[in-house]
Image (cartoon, rainbow, N blue to C red):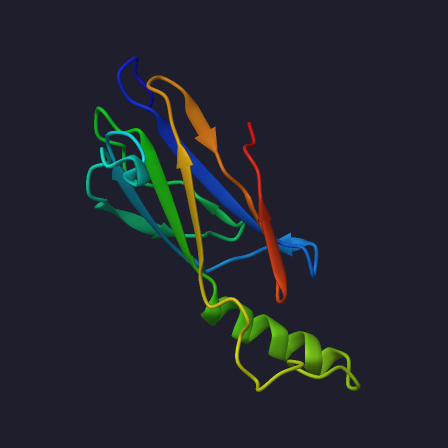
Length: 139
């Protein structure tokens, strides 16, 4: 929950290749305080734990951010999910190759880093497909 001294984060994943939520994707949350590391004032990343997306593609139990958090990183382990779904899609479309390359998933993971302000909530959806992704600040 959000208070006046901490930010809060939520996320969900939509597989845009099938128009459905992405279930079973592990999501890890890390935080740091201070300015960006490129300015020499950022703290070290602190792993806070994680969650797994449910049938609606949502993580409803991400850890609470510590007081003083200024930057958040969400790490999405998408490789196992994409490996399962790309194979299913290829089987459904007999002439579609499971992967245009060597059979490896193009994006094995997606890491999203963003700045936060105390007291605000940040919903960061991931729109995913086998060959691309996008994120935005939702509501």
